[in-house]
Image 1 (tube, rainbow, N blue to C red):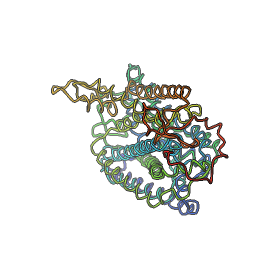
Image 2 (cartoon, helix red, strand yellow; image 1 turned 45 degrees about the vertical axis):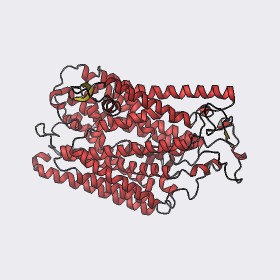
Image 3 (cartoon, rainbow, N blue to C red; image 1 turned 90 degrees about the vertical axis):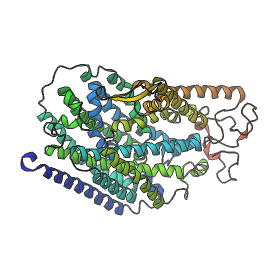
Image 4 (tube, rainbow, N blue to C red; image 1 turned 30 degrees about the vertical axis):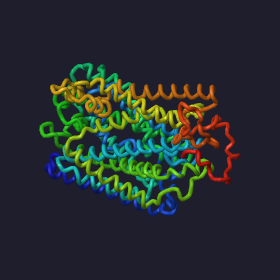
Length: 594
């Protein structure tokens, strides 16, 4: 219809007009909600957590929109085209299920540390200040790369598919979401998620109906690539759950939704609704790329990998130029803009929380004596946090524009955080297990992920001795190939292990397996030392869990030196009497490492 009544330039104007109108509407609504809730956001804690303010419906839509984004237009179709039907199913289910995991794990965290405001804070309370800093930096990195991927995706769609330029839409989304997120905090982000979720779901329904009504391309017999009977397809059974579960753990944007729910029960119910919506959307978008690659693999697999979805929707892309062709393409771009803004504002709030968790290390000392309260005065002022988030956003927007113009692959950006989070996730999960508290401390936490990091790096380097990294577009994979100059095994191996391994299952198994083994092994060693010497080895300086009682003592064990700080035998937290702690007594001993 649009193709008949409008020139191509008219489609560009219509798309830009609708996109800017949608962003302005969302911004005005968010600013209105910020003004309406100005008395609620009277302090930094309320601004960051919106604790107990969000209803079941708001949390469900917030889970849905926060897990979506413009990446759903590029990544699922791209992956399904190569991993086949098996990879498509694993991608869809593995994207939705982590939301449920976060809801239940968040409830356990709040039972142990009431009024928690970040994952990093809980890690500091559980393991000590060094693990808190490590987790805070990882969450900051994960959030930043997720934002960068969103900026690159929306810029790519407007530049490559629409035939426009990338930087205006990237700057518009970044500035508008930054404006209302820093003005209203988490509650405003959740309120806009409800509007964005409804609009995005309706547009997604239109896409699904269009796919069912118009897809008439002849389909050849299924081969192994189409069914997923390939190495990449079978790898998805491990790589998709590992990568998506683990990366979700380090998303402060997801944890914040748990703190904002009115009750743990409502948050858990909302997570099931959110997960169902996420799974359906990922399956539909991935289905478009899968069908397109099945019907015409020669054309599709040789095209821009971020545009596979449009090849599955009849007449939405000119197969010669790769540009938008009809009104359905406009609807998809509008949906991408709305979901992109919803995800970016959630990640903006995640940045606020991550920065605050790194700037409030002193709160742990207060937490030791008042576990049910938030320390007044330990938070940075809201305006300072806003300036820091602005400073982080500027380079992300610049790199987003650069990446969109230079064809950065979104799946490669996701692979960085997926690999890192897979190496870190099991020590974090171990912190939720009460029985491990006396035997698995902060030193073991850091040592576990270091073992995983070294193991994955060694695997990559061992496969790239004398090689250079090369990309095979047909197999959709990077590989280490012999180099005439002898290659650089270290740089090629590190790049291949953490950025270019094409989601090979061996690397995810190595990351998760070695960190899990380290958790078990170090816990056993600590248990044996505790039994033999009444001494817990891995409670060392800078890694002391803050939930245990004082005093600390200096180890006289010559093998480890007199400077190592250790704690006396500990009781599990569940058996401790918090009421008998010295609430108003003298300051903590200087020997306690914070």
